[in-house]
Length: 442
Ligand SMILES: Cc1ncc(COP(=O)(O)O)c(C=O)c1O
Image 1 (cartoon, rainbow, N blue to C red):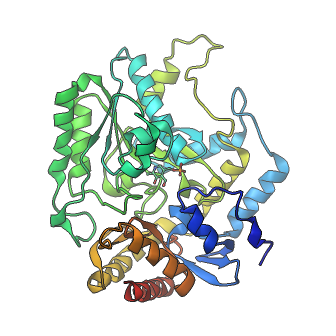
Image 2 (image 1 turned 90 degrees about the vertical axis):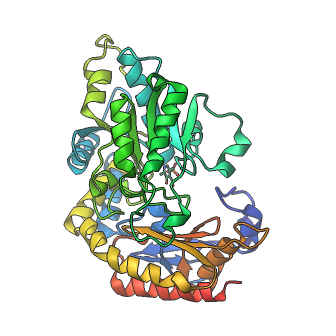
Image 3 (image 1 turned 180 degrees about the vertical axis):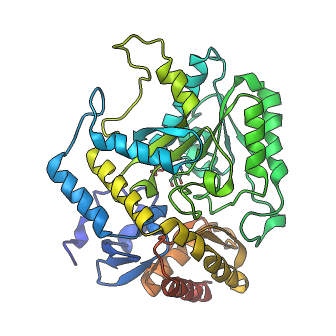
């Protein structure tokens, strides 16, 4: 049982988990390799979720493990305020090369939530530095997930996450979400709904476009259960924001690093935002790290042309663990693995097979909708009457205990995001197991 004492389950308060239920039947993972987890009771469980949308290079990759190990023995920590270490610059330059256009400066933090709050703060500071300090409003989208900081929660649009925590940030509004009945079972980007972006014009009319600092969206809404953007939707958001001098932020915490078969959704979908938030796949989930890619113009205004004196800090923002040496070592090794194993192309090649197998579940019991883009997929189940979320939760438990399959569920939607190294045979196994789970569900 690898050091697990059954009476040790009280002190740890699990995040986003029904704690009382967990203690009755704990789902404990004690090892991981490739696309497999090992459980405390000795089973091998197939990872259909890349951990939590993050282990894109697969688990325990020897090059990443070795890089972290080596770095820990050489430079355990370097203060990121007033000092730095060379890997931080190397990593930023590598990311500059990976992201399209002039998204060529990186600000580092430790999570997706911090990346979002950092991007929102940069947006506000940018407008103020340009003499447009009245641009203080932020616009997110209904059902968006941007982490759990007060900024990300405010622009986020998942009611259950927000309700307990008071009024949140002032001056925030939301676009409508993009899930349309008419698009059920669409493959890839759904054909209808580009006009939903025009709701932004209404919000700008209501609030005054000159008061809006930034619009933030996930290019593919992930956590809510994979909503790919309708064809033309992101292009319209880009056009409207550009026309009104509003910054467009893509939250790519899930979509960057190969999930859509390219370095970013911006590249895969051909739309250029002004900032991109990162985390998860940046280190393939091995060491916590987040970041924001920022366009040259924003960096120029805030840093190169800052009125601060030589000893003055241009942007009072950062974290004790920004660009932590273990994180940068993990990220650099991860980027090497993505490049040397051509994992983004591999994901792009696997995506049509994934789509085919996913949509073959259409006639399974309780299935209400199926959605996919790249290696992101969702099977939305009909909720049980009066018990929303119960069927999804049941699916997750049955998958794990009965079929050695790790899936992510959000409400009654099963979300799939296999590691990019998943082979066709493993993908076949994944869907065979998922089918078996669906057959059992009442
Ligand atoms: C789009 C998006 N933004 C932000 C976050 C928050 O990231 P973290 O949990 O690392 O704070 C997530 C996490 O799933 C996410 O999917």
